[in-house]
Length: 110
Image 1 (tube, rainbow, N blue to C red):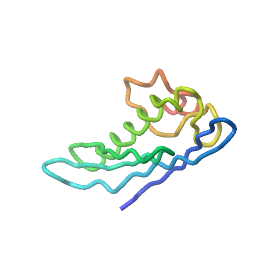
Image 2 (image 1 turned 120 degrees about the vertical axis):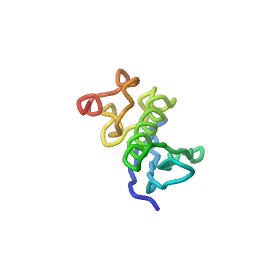
Image 3 (image 1 turned 90 degrees about the vertical axis):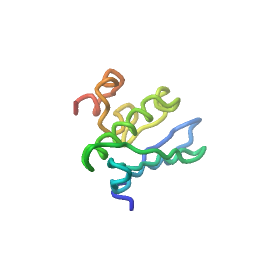
Image 4 (image 1 turned 30 degrees about the vertical axis):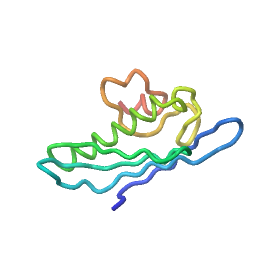
């Protein structure tokens, strides 16, 4: 079941396209908690999950993985992807090793 959804905007060549990010309910599976997420790129969805010792850790790790994927994507690096305003970030917590990549709003939230 989807528990959270955010729609980002991909602006390329003067056209805006939605990029939806969804997080699923964490579930216990084979000895650990998993929290699935999807990034619905125009080229197709990217599905993966965060894993943790409990459901909260799995959820936080999934959000950090979403942040890492968005910031390291070609569109993220080019500044073509944004949440509400270009250049302000995506609103997902970043893993500590990637905090130097954060822009405006995301950097202030650390």
